[in-house]
Image (tube, rainbow, N blue to C red):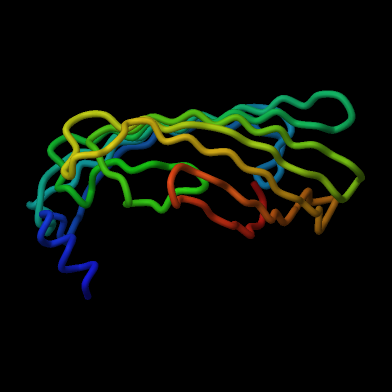
Length: 190
C-alpha cells in the first residue's frame, strides 16, 4: 500500500490497455530451448488505443535479436540485442531495463536498448556453466528523473541437461546489477 501511494504521488498509476499490432519474425536456431547455432529476430509494434477500451493511446516498438555460435568442445557464445521504444506511453507503460539482475518496471524511460553477451561452457554431456555480462541504456525524458542512464549486469550459473535428446536443460543463475539490484533465477531452457 505504501509503495502504491509513493508511485501514485510520482504520477505512475495503473491503467487499462488494449491494442493491435504486427510482428515479423525469423528463427533459424537449431533448438528453441538450448540453441547452439542460428539466430532469432522478432520485430513488433503494438498500437494501444482508447477506441479499443484502453485508458490511453500510445505505441510500443520492440526489436529482439539473438545469435548463437557453437565453438570448441560444445561451448556456445550467445549474444542478445534488445530495443524497446515507446511513443506517448503513460509512465507505467514506458520501456524498462530488460536484463537479468533488474526488476522490470523499476527504471522507466521512453526508450531502452540493451546488449548482453553470454558464454555457455560445457563440462560434460549433462553439466555446464554460463558466464554473462551486459548493459542497458535508458534514454528520453524519464517519468521520474534517473540517477544514471546505463545499467550494467554480470552473472554466472550452472546448467544441467534434463533430457539430452530433446536438449532440455535447467539453469540456476545469479545476476548482479548496480546498487541493490540482483537476482537468482531458476529456469527451464535459456
